[in-house]
Amino acid sequence: MSIIAALSGPDRVRARFLEQVPAVDFCSLRLVEERTELLTVRNDVVEPVGEQIDAGAMITVVHGGGLGYAATSDLSSSGLRAAIERARSWAERTAARSVFDFRQVPMAHPRGEHHTLVEQPWEGLSLADKLDLLRVEVAAMTGSRPGSGQPGDDRIVERSASLLRVCSESLYLTSGGGEVQQRLDMLAPDAMVIAHAAGVTQRRSAGSRGMSRQGGLEVLAQVGFSGIGAHLRAQALELLAAPDCPTGRLDLLLAPDQMMIQIHESIGHPLELDRILGDERNYAGTSFVTPDMFGSYRYGSELLDVTFDPSVPGEFASYGFDDDGTVARREHLIRGGILQRPLGGSTSQARAGMAGVANSRACSWNRPPIDRMANLNVEPGSASLDELVQRVEDGVYMETNASWSIDDSRNKFQFGCERGRRIRNGALAEVVRNPNYRGVSATFWRSLVGVGSAATRQVLGTPYCGKGEPNQVIRVGHAAPACLFQGVDIFGGAA
Image 1 (tube, rainbow, N blue to C red):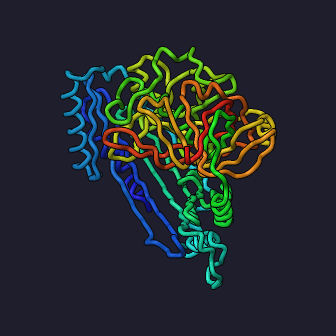
Image 2 (cartoon, one colour; image 1 turned 60 degrees about the vertical axis):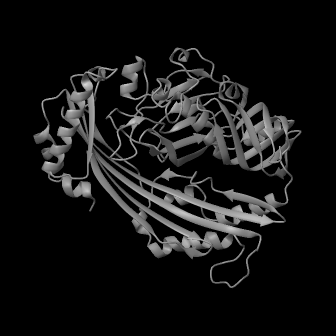
Image 3 (cartoon, rainbow, N blue to C red; image 1 turned 120 degrees about the horizontal axis):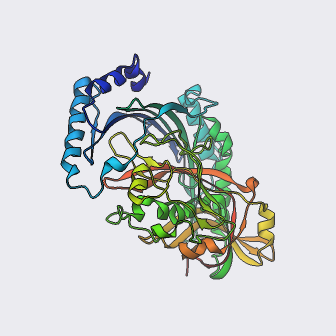
């Protein structure tokens, strides 16, 4: 039984919280328990199983225009009382010094539940069977089978496969009667192989847990995990013999697993409203986007439609309510290429005087919520992958991010990919290695000339989005089709 289940029945946490609530404008408790398990097989060796349970509560108090937080892992009446007093003290101290009157924030008192749909529970398969799944894929990376005694390909110098499972349960209570319970079940499979020969080293991977999704073991079938070892091995060896990516102004066709980082860095981060307001400049930077751009700025071509949608079943950052209790709804951030609204939660919306989304999120019980991406998706168009390829006379198709760099205003960027293929006269040609491209966010999306159909769309995600002081690493989802860009600065590894 989870800690939350043990403590919340019969209404224990709720009763303890409400009996301690002081006479303030607003008080909330956000109780979170996360159970994490990491299974890894590396070079046919099972690494120590990683297991972690982390639980505690964050108290938020708004009073007299000030805001205060206090976190505690002591969930007794005395522990909650002490945390509430600390949060109230901070609210009183900041009231006279804050540049913003937090009484202007419409704090929600929601009631509801949200749970991930799980078809095949993680607990339904034994530890030994889960490890066997990984062993099979890792062995296939050399062309052998577990226990077969067959020699592997000595050009394969590193290989691994892993499963990261997270179950997060939360209980949100407010002094005005709000009560929300949520449970998120997540699975992040990963696989990687490195090949080396004649002084050339190439990596082929599943994108550093880019296949992360919500759900149970059915996620493995959804993302095609079975057989991934042999697939990555074949492509890594192919890259060893491939020529370097050419350099020039060429058309660029991005696979969904590279679109993920493109969306994340050059749309997601620039549209975070706290960053636009200057909160992140000391650590993660600012944004080239300014408040006056919303409603009129051409962010991309008329083909670009971007939505914030925590309601997508199975996407990695789906939820029913954000960590300030705001109901999660689908919203267009960019429609027809025109910037519509920022990624700002209730506090940032009040500060900026503009509409935002339900994206006030914290990475843990001991962090306050800030403006974060959740599920940030490019909506599909109508073109098949073949049709996108046929439009290109001279270009490169790129898959799977290998490196990324973007300036502190999230404008000028340079990305490298693991694998590329030349496109000539409307047809896919030879594989090329070390493909890279660069651009400027403010103009790159305007070069979008083709958007793939729903058949090209993939639902992906990452556990590793960092931001905030103190740092918060949070889970983000990105769904995207293949997308075609015209006249992009492309270069190879030797350039």
